[in-house]
Image (cartoon, rainbow, N blue to C red; front, top):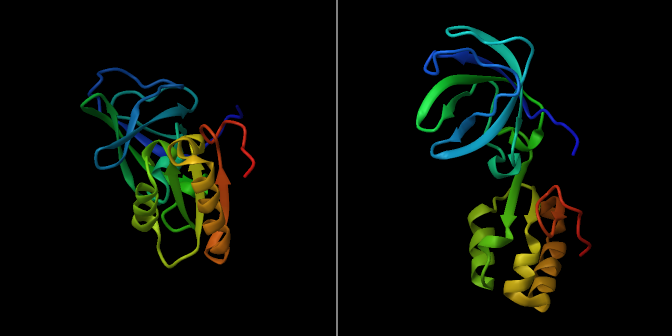
Length: 181
């Protein structure tokens, strides 16, 4: 997998861990209240207690946190229940994370057990603005709804393509081989 940078940020080491932060550190980032993801910090040297440094961050599964960051947002950096640092966003490299960019909606097939689940998920996420739509674990939707219902969903999406900027469909996760629909 190709290395990626999702954001650039200034990390402030609060001293809770009582030692320096080193490159390749993988803490949790509280992107939104009670919504954590892991991120890999990339930088040279170390960040001593009480110091700050600009870093690059690669998140695991940034698509789950679409449209949730902006330049200047202060994100708690955690180890378990402890906030050990703050990351203040200085640049957003991955547009899926940018609150001011095109809207992204990720539908996780593992959450779709019947056609009503699908409609609820779509209704909950749809807005009047054009969207980028991503299905992950689409094979779960096919398994739970059957090929016929899945094809109807794809047809419905194609009928509304004037409101969809892009549509991506993956059998597993977004890093797996793209499936053909």
